[in-house]
Image (cartoon, rainbow, N blue to C red; front, side, top):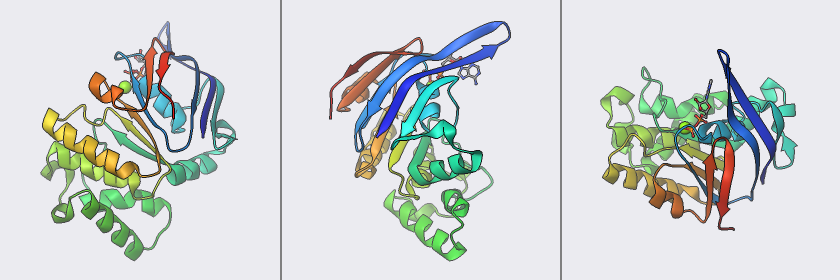
Length: 224
Ligand SMILES: Nc1ncnc2c1ncn2[C@@H]1O[C@H](COP(=O)(O)OP(=O)(O)O)[C@@H](O)[C@H]1O
Ligand SMILES: [Mg+2]
């Protein structure tokens, strides 16, 4: 269960303070599929970064399975992220100098798995996302849809309990985006899935729909 209690995150830029998340309360039960939509700048990415432990709130709590993640040390936090969270980004964020296989192996290196075990898991997952024939391609030698498949493989190779996707289809054409969404849905399995999207139809397809505006949740519809 994810529980966010009055999370506030401000950014100071020059003289201006931006209220990126301005008092968020939210509860997401295990296994839920939640979409988060809202205009650009409404705080969606900031919220995901708070949940994923990439940013710390200025105040408020982010509880994951009852643990306030902001009380964790850096080492504990990186272990928590490696264990529980898989992230997929709009711009893929792959390592350009590494092959698809090496990119997917990265979170498994953090786990200190043997090279043999890493390879086996990464290959298996890349096959699962339909990239069996692209293991040795670098990101620059892959299409956008293929790059997103690599990043999805990297996100799930650790079998995370929480899958977070920030506009995963935002850089793809409609057809490829549809295929990527289909893949993400098929890999949801028992996971909690949080999807940020601009696409209203896609947002509505989630059983729970959260809408943000000016750093606040302005509506939450559906339930689990
Ligand atoms: N690292 C940062 N430094 C300063 N301002 C930021 C930073 N990240 C986000 N912001 C600001 O916070 C607000 C919310 O941003 P963001 O969470 O990225 O919104 P969204 O994902 O909904 O487009 C925006 O006004 C943005 O400019
Ligand atoms: Mg964003």
